[in-house]
Each structure stands twice: as structure tokens, then as C-alpha cells.
Length: 296
Image (cartoon, rainbow, N blue to C red; front, top):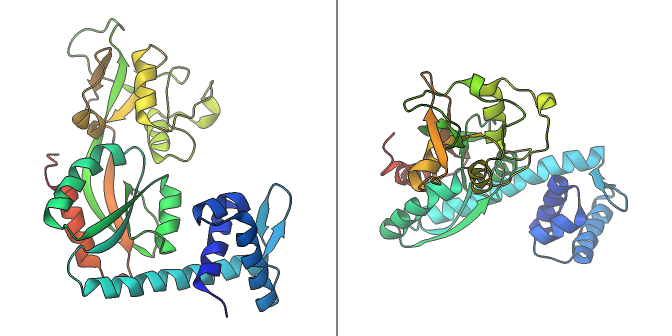
């Protein structure tokens, strides 16, 4: 009989295209994971994967099998949500995902409020890029995610939370007069510091500055805003920082922050969950906790 464990293993391989990474995510040894997939292929009489020493990819049958597996895993997650719904608002395990440019600034205060109001919640946090969060949400591996719009998928419901404006961060010895307003012309591609590939904040900054990736003259790839802030403080470039970053952490004294003229560059922070979940009211309550204390 096909097991949910086998479907989870197959789905993880589809996302990572790598046995080792899939095994690590599933907390199982690589040989054990590989054996389970082989048993699945034998049971179904289908070749699901094309294997090579360094890479694994899905066959046409594998693509369709993963699509169906994700639907099953999502339905199982919704069934578990149905059971949780009967135990009260926001109780039991809650799997929350957030992008790295939001998680450190929005979640800590929210988690304090969550513990005070809903003490029965067992929160499990996941921090990664938007594309992975959406995939894991649809597959039932996460219950709810927090990211910046757009979040395009017909399978998820989105609630907009607030607008997060961007400020220009430069080293304080740049010689600018007080009261100067930031403009895109103050940002050159050879000085712009960015998050790594896959981070939506990277794309939002490039779009505002009207800079294509082909114009970037040096390698970028920071995985956290804290790293970028330190690079700016030490004179290695400039960047755009989300306002929530400044609200929650005092800026380095070596950095000067400049606000842009209206319309100011910004992003919309939102929460999302599967449309099929019976826990919509719980997630609406959770989103309100996100908003509590946020003075846009």
C-alpha cells in the first residue's frame, strides 16, 4: 500500500532535485529515502525519477505523480486542520513560514502576544524564500505563511496586513545636507547591496531602481538584512531597507537613513493560507495578532 510517508518523500525530492537534501528535510537517511521511492516505483510500475550521480529529475509520469501527491498531502493537512478546529481557536501545532526580510522584525513581538492569548499553540517556524513557502503551503507542509505580495496561486487565500515603506541606507559620512530626500538617481548599480537570488526583496529593489540583473557589476548574495546593514555601515555600498527593520532594531550609528519622496517605494506584507482549510477563522485571528501594535 502506498503510504503518506512515501508521498512526502517524493514531494521533497521534486522540490530539491536532490536525494540528500530531501532526506535531510524529511529527517531520514538517504538510503532509506531512496529505497522508499524505489518501492513506490515498483508498486506503481512507473519510472518516476531520472537519476544521475549529482542530480535527480522527474520523468513525465513523475511530474503527474507529484501533482497528485501534493493534492493528497494538502487534503490530509486540511483533515488534520478539521480535527484541530474542534479543539478551540489557535490550538495544537501551528506551522508558520515567513521570509527572512520579515521574520526577525515582525514575529518576535507577535509570538509574545500569541503566547499570552493562545497558550495551547505549539508553534513551528520556518524561514525561507517566498517560492519555497508557497510550495510548502500548497503541499500541506505549512499552515500559514507571511511574505510580501504578490503571492500568486489560485489555491491560497491572501490577507493584506500593512504597507512597509523602504528607506535609503547610506554611510553617514556621505556629506549630504540635513533634510535631503532620497531619489533613485542616488543609487548606482555598482554600489547597490542586495539580498541573494530568490529573495523577493531583491526583485522589489531592482524594480524600483530600474536596474536589470545584467547591469549589476559585482556579485551579490547576502542571506540576511543584518549582513547588508553591516556592509553599508562599513562603507561597501548602499541599500534600501524596509521600514519594519528600522522600527524593530536601532540603526547602526554609522548609517544615515533617507526617506524617499512620495510615492515612496514600498512592499505589501501579507498572510496566506490554503483556501481549502477549515481553520480560516484561526488564521484571521493570527493575522490580527500580526497587526496589533503595528502603527502604519
